[in-house]
Length: 113
Image 1 (cartoon, rainbow, N blue to C red):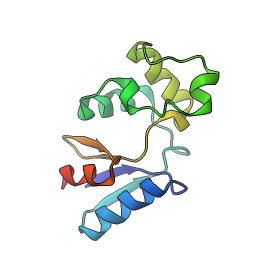
Image 2 (cartoon, rainbow, N blue to C red; image 1 turned 30 degrees about the vertical axis):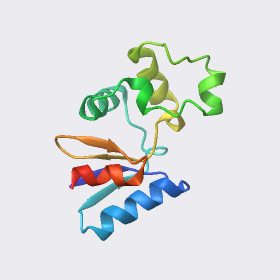
Image 3 (cartoon, helix red, strand yellow; image 1 turned 120 degrees about the horizontal axis):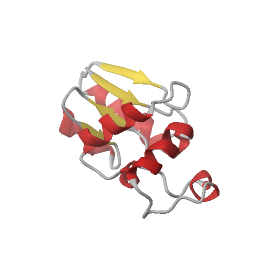
């Protein structure tokens, strides 16, 4: 089972979901802008990604700048910002029990299959 943090308005997110479905994967879609991940969930996904918090964020978002965030902020501050403002979470993210992948490029999700 793959949990898929999805934003249906995003073409990359739609493409990643289509890729998973075309491969026959069992997918549980989570509309993360409505069903917002908490800080603990974000830390778990960060660990599965093996990335710094900044690398799972949309730093070009207006909200990132409005909050005064920087690429040098510590992970705790960035995780808290993503929990409070889920628009900052990079999309899409596909998550299994053991690993996760950001779908940029879309083909990166194939590593979970």
